[in-house]
Length: 403
Image (tube, rainbow, N blue to C red; front, side):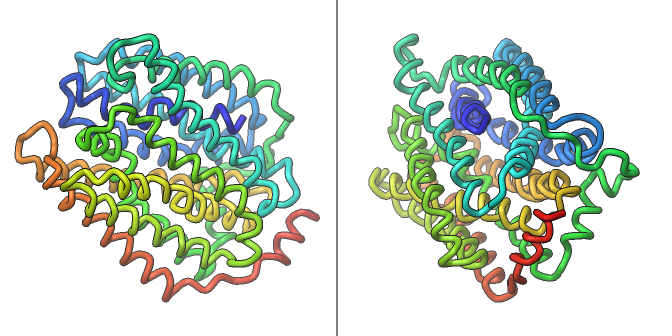
């Protein structure tokens, strides 16, 4: 499940900007990274209402992935109509984004130790993303003479994998709705009931920092592929997969690191890595210093695992079984949703402003772009380090498992 879940995302997400740039949509490349978080904002309504109360998780996963695959098959047909192209990507993401929280809640339902078992399960998602990137540049390249990222093949690959995963989901272990029979309200659907149960000062600080950090994070997912293209890299998807290779190694080390470092230090290291990565990109840009760019990409293991995965585990350890899906959905809303939405719009508009009407930034202009998210991430890191004081969760976790 995790392998295909992230294979799908990796197949199109890291190439769509390059595709649009090469098909007359260079000024709209930030819109896929805007509709993606819009869908993440809607995701809690699926998680809080459908998955928690009425239908088994594996069945909802299956239906959403099949529908999403069908939509993605249609997207490339409207390349000449940017508005329809982007609206179809919105529809696709409305199917896909709820599955992130659903996959996590299904996994958490069937394991006993989040810290020890979940990273070993989640690492297969990272492997799926790696295989997607390598497949685009080393398999699809045999089918076309052009750079694969500039063709429709990555989108068709994602669509095919989505349908396959959708069918596979119906074979997953039965995961009944935990909130069946409970009253439905807007608060519960949006995850606010879960927030009320989880809420204490450390949790509010964690959520606020997660939201703020996701604003500069959006610049990486949107513009790294375009930056690599401008720097003369031809195997763009394969180059970015080195970040996921790094992520795999750190994912396997996470159980040991959790025991030694704890939640606060893990999150702070992840935040610091984002600031360092952007700083390396800025320094490397004028002369396209590839080793520095690669170090920035290789930091992805620390950036993603120590921030996103640690955050998912932290939320789950504070959740009761009845609100697990709501809690994960609320985290998706705050990070992949509102934070990434604001970040995509800000990054896109800054990039457009710096280009001054040109199709792309020059290498001398890229540092101006990358120093902005680097500084923002550094400020969030400092505030989080001063304010966050985690409360012990071990006792709560035991009680939850015994419930």
